[in-house]
Image 1: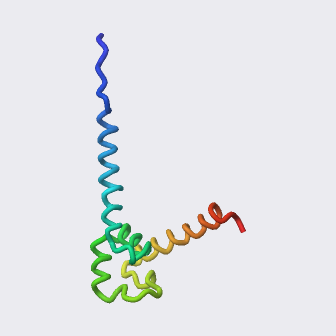
Image 2: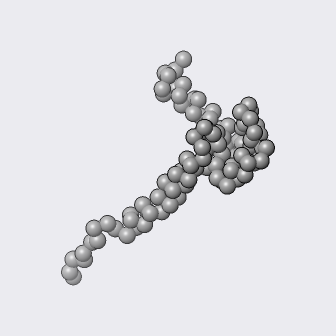
Image 3: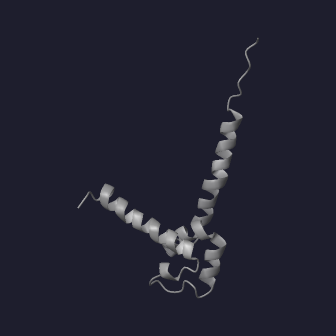
Length: 101
């Protein structure tokens, strides 16, 4: 039995990288194209609720103003997601960046 020749990059690995790029890198680039002044809340909302929806909310009156923007996110699941991510960010920052208080 002869030795089989291995390709330089195994097909499953190359496919996995393409898949990861399509699922992770490209959407993040698209979400970051939301104006930088919009901040992390809208980037998180776009990640969870869809970039098109956030752009629609911004053109309407749904997210007008700066106060309580999370409470005005029209999708309950997205509103919950954004609040949870921000909460965990504060906890992480307190524990691992600022040290335990």
